[in-house]
Amino acid sequence: MRNQKRVNVVAAVIKHSNEILAVQRGTGKFEYLSGKFEFPGGKIEQGESPKEAVVREIREELCQEFHGPLFHSRASRSPSSVTRSGRS
Image (tube, rainbow, N blue to C red; front, side, top):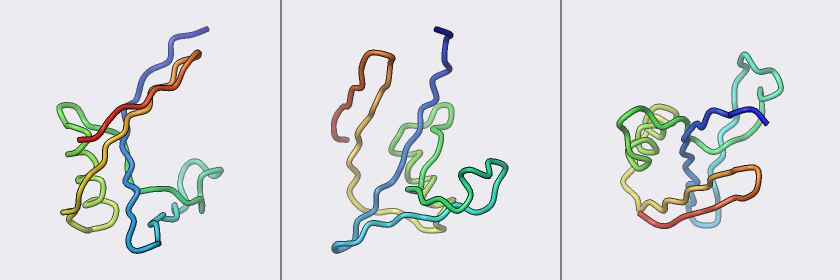
């Protein structure tokens, strides 16, 4: 098995009443992703916390400032397991 580069990412699952926000991707360099729906988010930048990253991603992708409560969950995948961790 070859070594895989780990990329840390965040995503915002935004719930209002009984609705959950998903955004539709535009046309991009990966045709198989064009038009698909996803939660806002992206890569965590160097020196940035996950909380800072998700707030920045909401600002960049939705042109909105986020002031709500945050729930943080981390999933790590290795060939043998998936783990999740806590609130922040």
